[in-house]
Every structure is written in structure tokens, then in C-alpha cells.
Amino acid sequence: MQNQLVLDKFIDSYQKLNKDNLTLLDDIYSADIVFVDPMHQVTGLESLRTYFANLYSNVSRCQFSICDSFTVQNDGFLYWTMQFSHSKLAHGETIYVQGHSKLKFKNDKVVEHRDYFNVADMLYKHIPILGNVINYIDKRAS
Image (tube, rainbow, N blue to C red):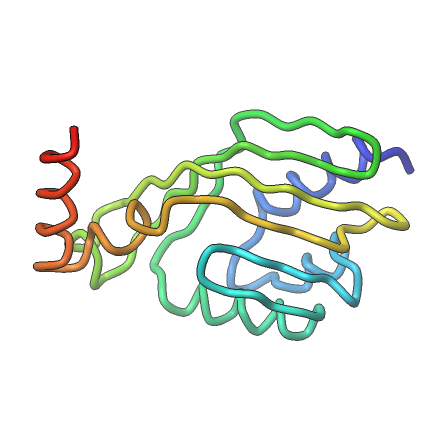
């Protein structure tokens, strides 16, 4: 299977992914997947399923809108906006976070997945008091 088809399958699976169908991860990730984002590193498919189960148990909504994607040799690149709601952040309103992912393919599955995004946009800016401080600093810096 060419890598563009693997990437398309990955995107399709992420568009459907939710707390009730985490078995979709088995279709796109290798058993020895290494997943890294700015706050976590997870190794192995079982650990990744647990990570996603915890993620979905803490949010009332989580969805990814893919803005752009492409492949180069055995690598895939995604540019996305994550939309999520958490009862303890931003008064439960939807939070939008832009980011991108680098994927490495092997045998028609993803063996490495690294996400890049601004943790302040996702979390820190939406925590009472801390968010006010970060927003103040942002305003002063600009």
C-alpha cells in the first residue's frame, strides 16, 4: 500500500475516533508505536489505547479538523485544528488548538507519531488565574 493511502486511512480513522471505538487505533498503528506530544510519550499500542481512553474520559468533546496533509517517502505530515471541550477549562466552551503531526510509516502502519502544538493554547491559558497571567504576558510581549 503506498504511503498516501496509509495517510488517508489514518485521517479517516481519526475523523471517526471516539471513546467507544478505540479499536480503530489497531488498524492504523503498529504494535510498537511510539507516540510523543508536548506533554506525554507513550510506547506500544496497548499503552496508546490507555492514553486515548484517559484523554476521552476527561473531555466532553474532542475532534480534529485536518487542514492539510502530504507524504514524503516514509513520512506523513498533517496540519490540523483540534476542537475540544473540558468542563474545567474555559467554562466548558470549545477550545481550538492548531498543531501538526509527523508520522513515520512501516508495513502500512504508523510506527512513530509526534504531535507539535502550543500547550499554553491548549491548557495553561484556560486555567483560572494562570490563564490571566499568561494572557497578560502575551499582551505585554506583543
